[in-house]
Length: 109
Image 1 (cartoon, rainbow, N blue to C red):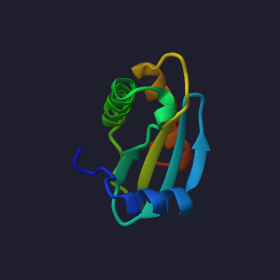
Image 2: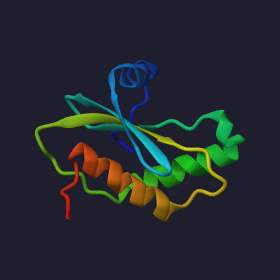
Image 3: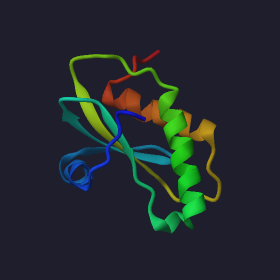
């Protein structure tokens, strides 16, 4: 993903100054910025690296499924999954759509 948050400084800035939106399986932390970037933070509480990497792959793929509109307002997004027994692509898509609608990046249908 070419527009991803990578630097620790950017993550800290989003966590410190950003607003939060909660859904059943995700928390979205967002901050207005000059460009659109997305990051995924999965803590060690979710399990070993194999499990955490699978969760990040599911989140990246769910985010790719949304064609975010090129509007004047861009954001830094950080998605935080909640600790669950099972993680699924459809659940992440549904909750990601809910949070992105709340921010105003997706048109409400």
